[in-house]
Length: 120
Image (cartoon, rainbow, N blue to C red; front, side, top):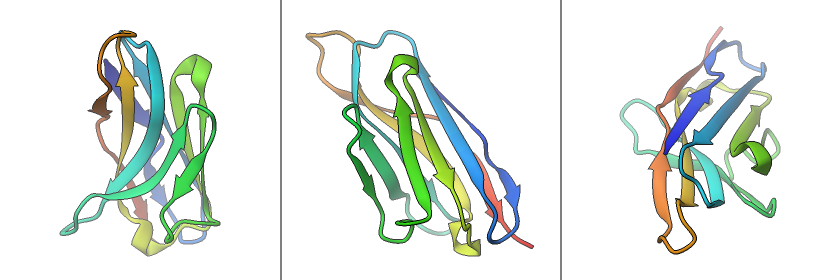
């Protein structure tokens, strides 16, 4: 199983970016997908998660500005980031809690990070 993230970059404060992350390989189901981020000198923190049924959860710091969504048919999760602030600068990692086979336990997978830099 691989998670391939894309969409990071440099954006001015107040701007927008959209991150994507596609899971591929042997996948039976993905109950939860999400995004985490890690700024320099800080611990990795949750940004948002979404269940296969569409229930979303957000960190307080991004509520009202970020929107997480997913396409279950494509095993892909998205993060629309609006009104970006300098403090959103971090490496963003996608995450999937998935089951490779019906009888297998759920395992956690991480994508490679994608850099988001918010600066004028």
